Image (cartoon, rainbow, N blue to C red):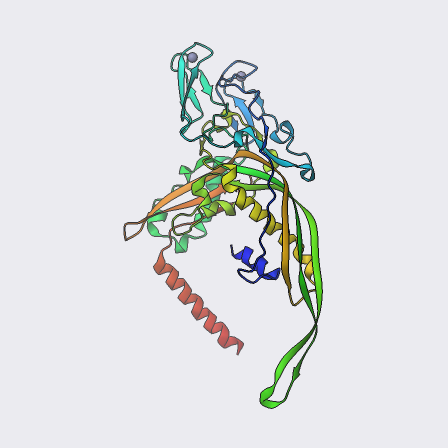
Length: 412
Ligand SMILES: [Zn+2]
Ligand SMILES: [Zn+2]
């Protein structure tokens, strides 16, 4: 938020005097069918027929537990043509797994085991797989039901658990001095869990135009004498106009409503934002086997709910990219007119991998604060919050002040 307001100041707006934007409306979305080739139920190893399949994190492949055969799902970018030029996007295109959620859609899905014919139930709220209780085969849910459980694509974990544990320990150890003793005593990084979090990945094809007045300072001098002195400027005033196309590639937006809430007094969710970005070009077609042994969180937000956030971010990116062209106007530019047109958008939903270590801090007043240390399941980028021992923090800042004072004395 601070970043945004600074940009606005740089581009010459005073608060509250932004020109209105005219968004252009387009017709209903075109849909990319991302689950047309999948089926629910038995998903067998093509070599031995086993259904015991899970992710080999080190290689990012699916592995059969019996014959060790390994394979990978098709690249979602290639399979669904997500790499066509953004400049050619026209109207709204969405993956079928990003479609609007239907409230009240059953979270429990039942279907027939194709090995023995038994009726098997999968509770998609908690898992995307279940074992047939008669023949012991693993059955998977791959078809998109409009409850947000099956996305268009998934980015598999590639950072192994022991590496995540190592990074979490390192993060906590380097903050040991300030950490709450109880937290340190109870610290068990091995309890980290791998979670697939739901995101919407967006490409935007837009154009912007701005018109206003810019000033360039020529000279500065003092006029008057004694107690009537003042500084004056001479400046050239220009009419300034900018018009450009804007292509935004893979903007990544949380699609879980509690993650969109970044109020730091209530949670520490904004930590997840700091371990971005993810290599979203490597997403693969969704297959429930990637989730085996991991936890996942359903999408509960529609494209419509986050559309405004995306367009606002797109506009901010445009303004920011334009700044270097305005350097000549060192006394600022005051925009009087702004046009912003969105020509095309492409949305896909994906699960992205995060290792999470969580800890509940019980405050003296009985309030509970949830702390996280999060590790990007691809890049290993780590960020977190840990409960602070306030007394130690005070001592540390006092020491810093003493050192500061000594340094100041030495420099005299
Ligand atoms: Zn096999
Ligand atoms: Zn069965």
